[in-house]
Amino acid sequence: MSWPTESELTAIKEAVSKMTGRDTEEVRVVVAPYRICPLGAHIDHQGGAVSAMTINKGILLGFVPSGDTLVQLRSAQFEGEVCFRVDEIQHPVGLANKNGAPKDQSIWGTYARGALYALQTSNKNVKQGIVGCISGSDGLDSSGLSSSAAVGVAYLLALENANEMTVSATENIEYDRLIENGYLGLRNGILDQSAILLSSYGCLTYMDCKMQTMDHKLIQGPELEKPFRILLAFSGLRQALTTNPGYNLRVAECQEAAKVLLTASGNSELEPTLCNVEHAVYEAHKHELKPVLARRAEHYFSENMRVTKGLEAWATGNLEEFGKLISASGLSSIENYECGAEPLIQLYKILLKAPGVYGARFSGAGFRGCCVAFVDAEKAEEAASYVKDEYEKAQPEFAKKLNGGKPVLICEAGDSARVL
Image 1 (cartoon, rainbow, N blue to C red):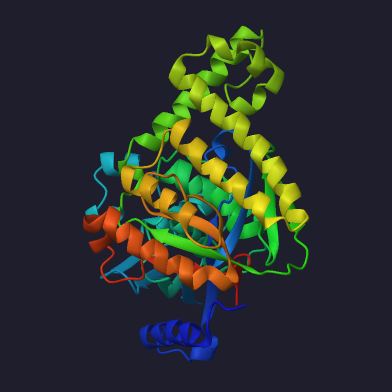
Image 2 (cartoon, rainbow, N blue to C red):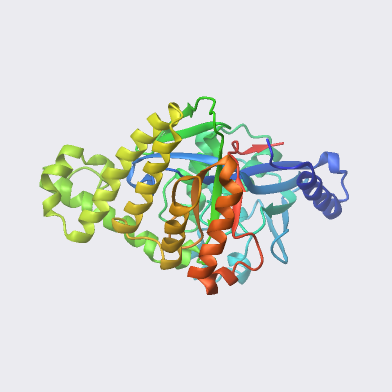
């Protein structure tokens, strides 16, 4: 595996050693990779089928058990220090703020408190805190790669490890959902944390989000004659998910579409999510949907079909077909799900023209961040250079906001989250 590198591990261990006075060999490190979603965009919250894999970039959390109830954290990216105790009862952010919680509840340590909230809510006995330092791969926060879910998973694994808990990946998927849905008030699904916790190197992870048990399969692709790389092309548009109403609005529209279709088919007692609507029911009653709701439903059902076809293409090593499905997913995200600001749409179109690219789409929710593409490994550098030059012409102002960081990163597939 190419990540984390020895120098990255050494740096994070030395940072914790400096904080605590402990030897670097005593420092434990959580590795929580970022994820991409080749197919299954925006349908996990409706119980759809999704595919995902991790990449060789992500979150490193170096830590040692504190020996008492203290949690003390520093960040390689943000200033300040976060301190609290594990015997403090944590409350959802909205409720805590309403009750006059300290202002520092909103800073970068929020996810650490959220992890404690999730464990407390699940009746886990957290007696010992951690002292640690967290670091993300440079320039990849707010990029649509599930960096927030990776942070949440990292804090969960560290607290569990420090308290000698044995927790399954499935349980941690639920705990990270509690961080995002219960503590922070987001309405996102379980794709991000599931991909981070369940993926395996060299495999495409398939997940059925309708199942409460998070039914998943690891699809091993054959040995490819032509290896691939993953391009991450950044837009320079940064917008935190919690401050943009677009995500929650589209979830509500999908639920409204499901409600109309279930009522029309005499199944109004079922939960209004699109996974409870049979495809035949959708075809028979889709004319009853308002245009906006019809587009959301069309994205859901067509994306489910693309996931199924994508698994077949991956399993047989047909990257050309796999790429076409990814690009079709990107187009449906624009036309049917109606997400993606203009800079991201332009970036998506540029990627489709880049040499060696099999397919491309938005990464993440599509309202900011980056686009992801699969590319022939031999043409990855050429493609990255092409995308950089063309995007600078199309969006010079946003290109400048990349602050000298690499506008296009060439990545490889990764592995699951773990404690080293």
